[in-house]
Each structure stands twice: as structure tokens, then as C-alpha cells.
Amino acid sequence: MVEKVYVTYNQVHKLCQASADHMLNEFKPNLMIAIGGGGYVPARILRSFLRKPGSPNIPIQAIGLSLYEQLGTDPQVEQPGKKVTRTQWLDLSSLEMANLIGKNVLIVDEVDDTRTTLEYAVKELEKDVATAAKQAGRGDERATFSIFVLHNKDKEKKGHLPEDMMNEGRYLAARTVGDVWINYPWEATDIEEHDKMAEKQTT
Ligand code: 5GP
Image 1 (cartoon, rainbow, N blue to C red):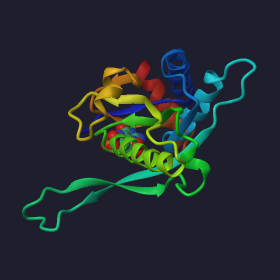
Image 2 (image 1 turned 30 degrees about the vertical axis):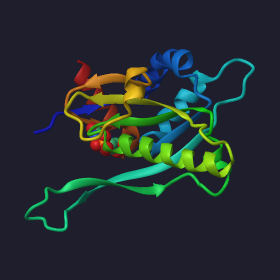
Image 3 (image 1 turned 120 degrees about the vertical axis):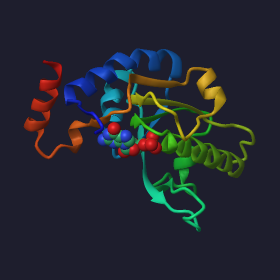
């Protein structure tokens, strides 16, 4: 059976706090893109720690991505895979995508499991920013993406992130864990029970 790990709101808060300085100093984000639903709460917490005195809050944009099982056309031959589907995306025709051009954009999610979702997010955002730059007559201008996750599972990844992102250290996981199942507090229907389970783990 897969080991279950319970994470509390306070732990999430502290993981964001402990990671914020690195992001401020290295990523210097102008805006965040939270991948929903797991990225929303960490992004909001992080915003409080990324705020510089006298400066406005960093804007948070939201995208929604979900993974579903996909069978190949011939299930006898092809292995079932996981495909990402967009449930919410930035609007290419409005200023939303153009707003990313030339910016340092921090992508926030709660967990990097197979990396499929993050690969999709980075690839598609890069593609759309390139299209937006072309449309805006800003030629080769791009966005610089970085990634923050609360947890990275130390396992073989199916998805891959751009080499320059990894080489330049634009990927940060607050914690690296084994191949466990993490229960986040915002998924709990009984938060007292959730916190009790978390407490039990530490005692
Ligand atoms: P990936 O694309 O990296 O395989 O998976 C990303 C998504 O799968 C996450 O954003 C999350 O929604 C879900 N997921 C993967 N592992 C876990 C986990 O341990 N706990 C929870 N709550 N969700 C997970």
C-alpha cells in the first residue's frame, strides 16, 4: 500500500516562508501562475512573503489543468498514458498572455509527481507567450519561467522541464519526498481529523 502523508496548513505556510527568500533573490518573480486547484493556496501564501515593503503585491494568474488516463487507439498495442487537459487557461486574445512577455513568471503547484502537468504548463505557456509576442510586434521577447512546488517526489519522471530551467536552477521544491501519497489540508472534509493524522505522524 502507498504510504500516506498528512500535511497541515501550518506546515504549508512554513514551507512557503522557508522558500520565499530563494525565490526573491534568484527568481525575482513579477507575477505568479498558480496551477489549480493545488497551486492556489501555496501561491496566495507565498504572495505575502514575496511582497517587498513599499511595492504592490505580485499578481496571481490562475490556470486549471487535470490529468486523465488516455488509452491509445489500439489499447492492445499502446500503453495507457496520462494526458493533460486544460480546465482554465490564460486568454491569448486579451492582454493576459501579452502581460507575460519580458517578465519573470513563477509557476506554482503543490506537488511534482510524474512531472507531466508541469511539462505541459511550461511548454504551452512558452508557446503562447511566443505567439503573443509575435502578435504584439515584440519579436523574440519571451518570459522567463521558474517553478515552485511544495513537494517533489523523488522518482522517475515522465515529463521533462527545459534544460536551461534546470541548469539555471529555476526549479525549487520546498521538500523532496519518496513516492508517497500526500494529503493536503484543503482536500480534507474533516480538518480536525486531518490534523490529528498529521500529529500522529510526528509523534
Ligand atoms: P503530475 O503531473 O506531476 O503527475 O501530477 C500532478 C498532479 O497530480 C498534482 O497537481 C496533483 O493534483 C496530483 N497529485 C499527484 N501526486 C499527488 C499526491 O501525492 N497528493 C495529492 N493530493 N495530489 C497528487
